[in-house]
Image 1 (cartoon, rainbow, N blue to C red):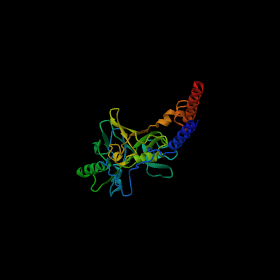
Image 2 (image 1 turned 135 degrees about the vertical axis):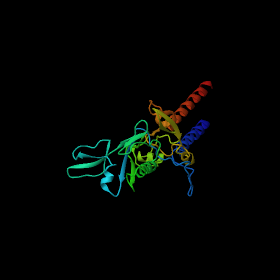
Image 3 (image 1 turned 90 degrees about the vertical axis):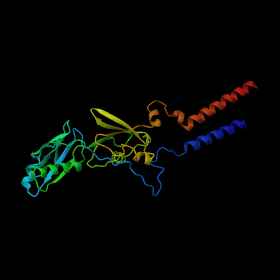
Length: 277
């Protein structure tokens, strides 16, 4: 009986200490110390793809000349704007809005006066420089200022995050950390070391990548550290959350379960020893 009591106490103590241990797969970037430097392997710019929408504004010293290259339209103030327009001003009776340029399947846009321009694969700065060059070389505008903005650039964050959904952004360098922050961070049950990122590579194809938020240097070297338009981030539930989808799935992983099992085993052993005396 003394041996039984000691074994029971040791087992209970072991289970208590095990249940109080700190999980190692929760904290982001545990290896980083004060002064640590994390360098991204390559800064990835957003590059234009078919079906992207852009706002392109041309400014010149002569406002009338600028108007030739800016597709403006008037809408009633009471009518709702659509996804094809972006509001840039307002008046008493209506609002002045710019029509957006939609990149066609060949990667072209039809620009006023100039005609078709192939811009697929270009960055915002490259598009602005290209249009400026066309305007000057054709002697249309002497000193144009061209501003290019994204209009429908977004990523989707789904799975074990606080606020899953699609998030629009208008910047050149959005990291996966930025995207997760926009979605309200991972839930406690999110698997931080195996996050899936799907990237659209055209023709209906998506390329899959896996990233680890527990290793800052590994994450920074990933091709999906900087996101592209239409990337999908999926945070998979951890094993504990998966087990919760079945009745009593996590019961075998609780201290009370093993204490009960140990107590039952000792009872059986004691009974067998008593009967064999």
